[in-house]
Image 1 (spheres, helix red, strand yellow):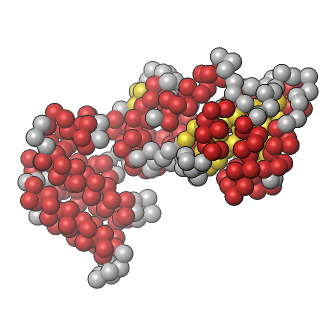
Image 2: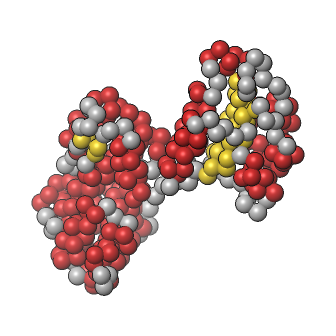
Image 3: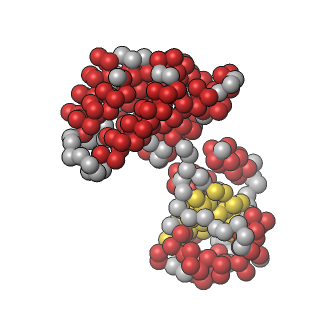
Length: 333
């Protein structure tokens, strides 16, 4: 997991195991920013930074400029730090870095923040960086991986969070770890260490309703609670900006696809692992499987696909509220 790899890099630096090259790449900018920030703030003292820390931006420099800067000697310090931000703008000429990578300046710590792209593993430069320094790929987490990431981040700071509260954050913020972390930092200012962050705290301080959200809609449908489900649908219809139809449809499709898998499982004790779901939520799939036979679940998935097509304007011109009501009738009929 990227979190564990990032922590390993930070721990190694703390121990004094500092490499001449850190190439941070990938789709998830959060870790790239976090590692480069740590290097920027900690390797040099405040007195050393004035002459020995340089921040370059990919759009403003060439690979030759980067190499020239990296080859300088530090002034009155053991090392210099050179950080290239937005390094993906240098992607066309990145192979020209190879001669430097093969013979790096030992007194320079060169950091590349290569966001939203990655090097080809088959190329010489990839292998050279992996040999000479640290090559870190920051992969996007799937939505179902984010709750566990939230739990681990908070546990590292002596906080805990209820499964429902974590799920609410993911539903509202998605898998953008930067956004999620910003909200977690706000919550840490409000809550005391060792205090559990609950759905109530999320609602009061972030503005996400603990009663009117896709998680509660899923729960209501799972339990065949028609009154509660229609109440949530009505709330969504009056707040379309905060509850877009595309998200609701996507989450319900994911839920019922997993219910279908649950039906097919010979060994239900393996459900959490096979479905990629926190064990806390497995009871929702058990209940849904009891209330909706496999044949019905298949029909529900077909209905969700139909509503998704209609939401794009194909074959119908209905409001978000009307489409949600139509979906709910088909699902719970």
